[in-house]
Image (tube, rainbow, N blue to C red; front, side, top):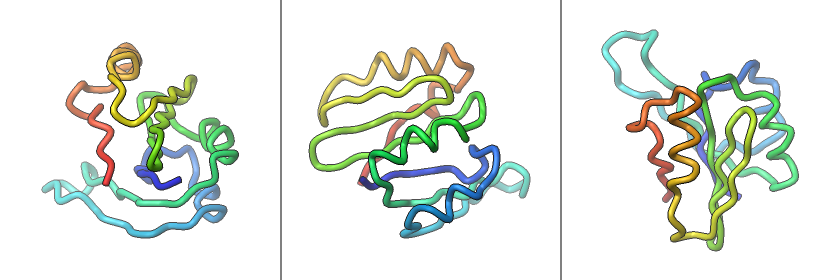
Length: 108
């Protein structure tokens, strides 16, 4: 599966050695401490549970293929068919303290 991981969302980055990083982009926020390293990755579905254990509170990551979208929070995983309404995951993310505008689940 393809996905997006924000490097800063991980408690440690050792897990990244186990997956394929396709691209890295750094956001262009003015203050360096506000910048995020956005990683486009390939991951096996069976690795997602292991990754879930490494995500910090108030963060998420998401993965997709041609059929489904998987959204991974620290304490919960949502699986959707592509095109489904994602409101349950958005509501959960807001409840966990993630700003609504960050719950966009962009795929390419």
